[in-house]
Amino acid sequence: FPMCEMLCTDQGRNVVSATLLFNMGQCHRQAENFDQATHYYRRSWKALVGDIILDAKNRVRLNEQGVDDEDEEGDEYLTKTSCEELPALAPPILQNIGQLQYRLGKIGDAIKTYEASLHHAEAAHGPDHISVGAALNSLGVLHYHLSSDHSAKAMDLFRRSLAIRTAAHGRDHPEVATTLNNMGRIHVQRDEFEEALKYYEEALEIRRARLGINSLDYAATAFNAGQSFHQRNKLDRALELYREFLRVARTKFSGNHRDVAVVLSGIAQIHQERDEHDEALKLYEESLHVGRAALGTYHSEIAMLLNRIGNFHFEREDLDAALRAYHEGLKIERKVLEPDHPNIIVTLSNLGEIHRQR
Image 1 (cartoon, one colour):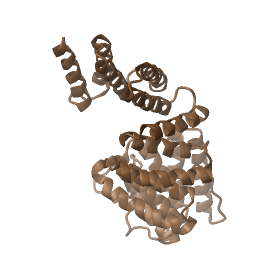
Image 2 (cartoon, one colour):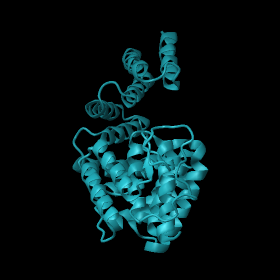
Image 3 (cartoon, rainbow, N blue to C red):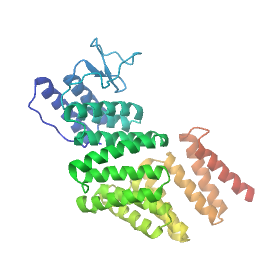
Image 4 (tube, helix red, strand yellow):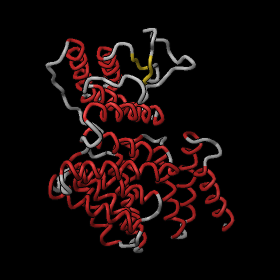
């Protein structure tokens, strides 16, 4: 997604006003004041193209009467047939609104907004411009998160983005690495770990060379590749990459960060698989402590971690410790998940097996 970049312009008054409002939105976004950022992005959009507005859900729609009615039936969303000529500021505004919609979990709305952004980027700059490649990459990310059923659509978008970015920058550019990393994630989603590693390893090499071994992007790809090596049972390489991520994360994040908890749990699993039980338990407990500090007690990821700890104790035939961990996880799951959620069913099954063995 676009970074919090400030823009400048020497165009007409409406574009100047829109640019100033957009930059105010960027300031709020940098400060993580996302509601205020959205407010200024919306104002920027209206200053730019007054008769085209965003509805209450931040979706792009036409309003021929110039009245900002909210959520009326029959709203016409911005399509390729509407407003063929808009200033070049239109795509960045829409991309930033789309990102904030994504942060709020409104993936369907974000996809509509990014599709509008893609159209206007193509209209403003042509089909092979880097802004088009960025929009295609972002749309791929959204389809990836929407559902595994959208993996073919996401992969097609990533391939188009990769072609544009490679032609514009060359193969060894960080933006190319971003799209390669995302293509690897699609293969993981399909359980195609060997294919995923081809993309991850190329992305990792680019990010190492261009961004350095202390960048978060390098660390993120190291973690992704580590997970795929873990799935392929190549534990030494997985452990090496997990530790690379942990090294960078501990310098970039606070001590109690969700991603630190995740990688500690991954390292613990490797030690568990190697029957290094004391080290595994120590790391699971550290992961749980960090996760609770980062996410709070009642979070689905804490419940998943407790279930892993329960599995660890169950494998060691410490049924009392396993029972405590499963019960604690179930308490969280019943608070944060739907009653028929598959995770609750799995936890109940685990508890049932302990009682059966007793």
